[in-house]
Length: 304
Ligand code: GDP
Image: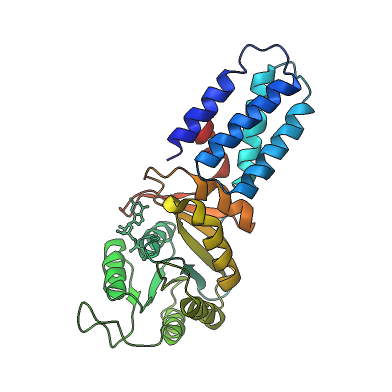
């Protein structure tokens, strides 16, 4: 991911190298290149506007520091502004003071929620927590079974509706809100320290499922609601994130499929547009392909 954006930015900065002083025309030329590179990487237009506006203002007003030449100064500003649009500081999960910490996952079908549920459970288990996975995605025929497989792989128990799936192609029976609530009760009784609730998504934004997710949120009062988004989503990132923010008021973002050849637009747009931090990144299908998201490291990776 970001390979193309990274190359384009490097090329832009190369043109500044060796210049003794930057004129306004140099800076405007650079900004134009940066704008094009970001738009080609599918970064949302308002984000590109804010980003380039900030860089221009700071580059024009930049003091010529003794240690850095003007080109390096611009790279430093771009780096700092990248960190800022990626959310600034890394944010840790908030844990409940009493009783189990409830983490709800929301996002479109195929975004990677179920896979992420296993990875997050695995990560928390390694930190000494005792997670319980709750299968409240009763929409997709195979979702409950898939979560059970993921739970088994992570060595974490799964709470699922008792009726279960009778046939591969049949929807599991039960009310997802009730399942989520029962899962939480089970976690309290068995003294699990964390409950991860997997919810249903559709391929597109769907009012009925958004209401269901919102009802689950009200029923289990999560400490964190993580919006899971596929980095490949491109220009749809903003509309999707905004719809989920209205629907479930998520507290953090998880980017998935960062191992793919996505152009990076979703990653660079979502935190800025929603004001919610990117907290984790998923980088493959294996349990360990999971990272705590650090905006500064991601910015360095892009500008490397
Ligand atoms: P859900 O519908 O949101 O629960 O999505 P799933 O967890 O079922 O994931 C959808 C597909 O994406 C599955 O085939 C996963 O194996 C795959 N997947 C999930 N996360 C990643 C990731 O970070 N990288 C890659 N390459 N594939 C992923």
